[in-house]
Image 1 (cartoon, each protein chain N blue to C red):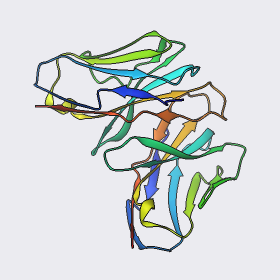
Image 2: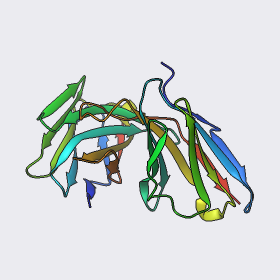
Image 3: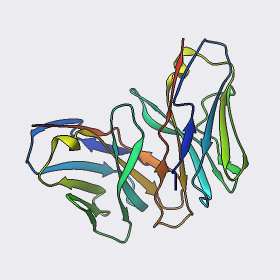
Image 4: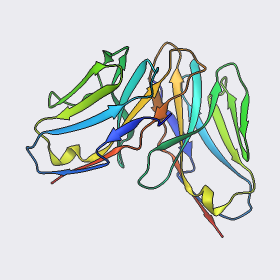
Length: 115
Length: 112
């Protein structure tokens, strides 16, 4: 298995532009999570999906952030318009099921820089 | 609300030393606890997962223990090597929740 695949690896954009981050979870994993990592706040959950349905988006900072999962093999996180304070590393992770025996697998992340 | 604390924030040791990284959490009602490794500029690599009913897990030179009642976990690294240099993150999944709460990590440097 190729693991959780994120693209792009790096994104540099100007303030005000739209940014779209992409994630392909591991096949067969029912849960998909988006996390953001910054030096100040560490890793924070933004949103997660179960069977393509958004379950908890309470971590999405503002209406400028939106996430979709149109099918079991693809999810996007969109920021529109982007701001310099959105600069961070965004991680996607997936998990097979709900049981306590299941751990998370993370992607390599997208490093976003908004200038 | 679950809070996860990792001590120390940074650790520097000479090669060959055995070392212990600490993780504490405030809510003992957990499903499991997962230790990750993160290399600079890279993603998170899962090292060990301990289920709530387990006391420890081992993988090679790594051993993780869990004491739910006291809200603590330790990651023991035997015979440390320069290649072990990375940030180690502890993450807890609370019972009844699907999400992980992370500590801020311990940055480990092992010198040759």
